[in-house]
Length: 96
Image 1 (cartoon, helix red, strand yellow):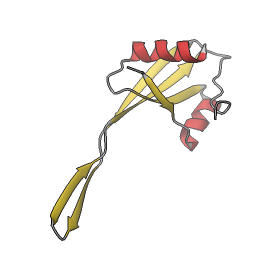
Image 2 (image 1 turned 60 degrees about the horizontal axis):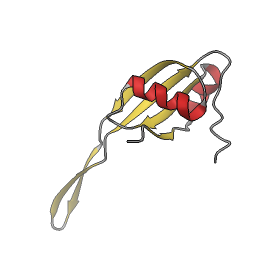
Image 3 (image 1 turned 90 degrees about the vertical axis):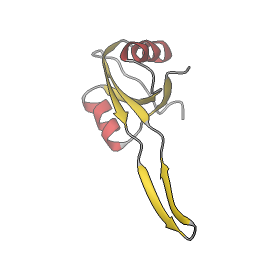
Image 4 (image 1 turned 45 degrees about the horizontal axis):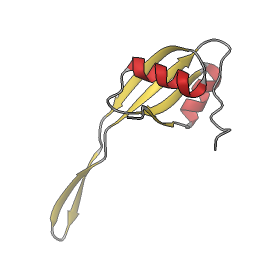
């Protein structure tokens, strides 16, 4: 089970990384805060102060077609906001 799926790079996440030294990751939905902390420290070689998680619910949609009503949904995901220690940083753009 890989815990870190991918880093989230949006305007809000980039602003957080520059101002608050916190980085956003999409993580496995069954991972807890302790596992996320250990995975980030092992992958990037930094010390983590705080981990906050967000469970994102699936979006549901309905389409009206010739054959009837079609219901669908996206997958549920989990995000983690990782606060690093003072003076440490992660360069997410070097691996792209």
